[in-house]
Amino acid sequence: MGIEWGRIIELWPEIQTAFFQTLTMIGISLSVALIIGLPLGILLFITDRGLFLENRPVNSVIGFVVNIVRSIPFIILLVALIPLTKFITGTTIGPIAASVSLSVAAIPFFARIVETSLREIDKGVIEAAIAVGATPWMIIKDVLLPEAKASIIQGVTLTIISLVAYSAMAGVVGGGGIGDLAIRFGYYRYDNTIMIVTVVILIVLVQLIQQAGDYTAKAIDKR
Amino acid sequence: MIQIEKLTKTYTTKHGTVTGVDNVSLDIGKGEIFGIVGYSGAGKSSLIRCINLLERPTSGSVIVDGKDLTKLNGGQLRKARLKIGMIFQHFYLISQKTVYDNIAFALRAAGTPPKSISTRVEELLEMVGLSDKRDVYPAQLSGGQKQRVGIARALANNPAVLLCDEATSALDPNTTLSILRLLKDINRKLNITIVLITHEMNVVKEICDRMAVMQEGRVIEEGQVYDIFADPQKDLTKEFISSVVSFNVPEHLLKEFTGTLVKVLFKGGVAGESVISDTLQNYPIKGNFLHGAIEYIQERPLGIFIMELKGTSSAVMDALKYMESRSAIVEVIPSGH
Image: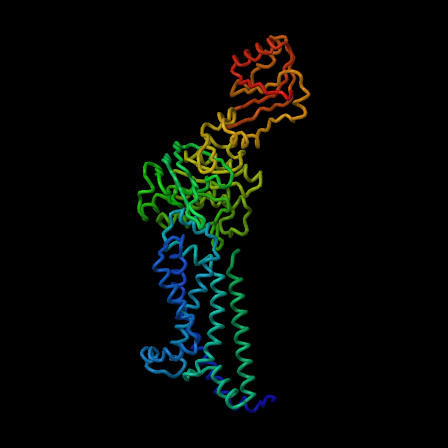
């Protein structure tokens, strides 16, 4: 095998495009996951037994839906959501179209991560806030989110890295991205150079994301 | 100030129903410091948590400042809680917020206008002696300092009642004493009613006016701290008191004495008088001190002595009667033979 440097230069524009496609997919789906998954995770937590907005029906329904989406293999979700993708984006091809399925998969994933992070908070701190006469909104804003912040940031890191992995599958529906490039050139055409280059890019990307996440989580934690 | 009426709290667990608090009624007056003592599992923690409805009683009522808390809806209960401060064994401060923000949180819960928050926080910090820790995070504070922040937070909205849930149990003896002094000080200055639960009899002795002893969910003894120390009725109460004032003469010594062993107790001002020397002078008996101390409970002296009295039995009897007439409480200890 061995790397043909000429090949890299030749395909550089393709690599660049693929890289930005990956960033687009991750950027969109992460944003959606944060915007919808965060409140969903909070809701899962505060409606649970013994908590300040305990509501068994709401908790069961959300928990059930989250579990359903999480149990569907991503590759099947990708295909099953083609009609929804068409409805939302008007197309089924490209990174933006692929972001629909990625978002749908990332929302429940992130919601569970948020819920788990909130569970790590000492119940006594929440109780002290209730005893002080705080409203549920104040407890969410000033107790739950600050106390779980470092842990949630670790969760965001985990979500981004999972999205990097999932986005590679988006190639199946013509989503593009680094993973897609690896499969098309590296795997189908036995182009080892492209295979190695794309894998190296993915490794570097994941390492950077992990380190940035770890650093941020540590920097903001006041414990 | 606080009326607890026929309060019962049961918990449903996998193994059936457990009674935490069993038909407890208490009446705690304004400005009083009331201590509830018991071992863990006695139900004292459940009881104090029922006073601000952190736990909802299964039956019975909790009336604080004239309002029956069990009849309030969510919003009304939140409002009522602004006037019931609470501090905890493990402080429960928001670890990601500064001392300032932790206290400001309580003020914002009450809807305090933003511009008055900072003045009030400074005031509270001054009161608990932490003015220099304003912008520090809880992790940088010692246990005693954290509890002071807890106290400042609890007092932020000028509550009428302060609940202390084992507030000094995680602190060393010196820090405990300084926190107790602060609580007493606050009680005097603000005339705030304090209810505290503890398993440390020292805490009760140090600051409480009245106390109740709990066992298996029930209040088994209740009264003025001084009276209970002087004359405990129940075995458990005696056990708790002996952890502070121990007057047990070793068994083997009991067997060696030939005279009459008596426990003499002087309450209040009498403790300072010369009852014993008068007795020994007036009756043909000899006295021998085996054990003794004067404890100060709420600054009132309580003298307890164990003596051996030697003489004819009639002389000893007369001497005992004389001491009783001088308002000492005398109790003959059965000897070992």
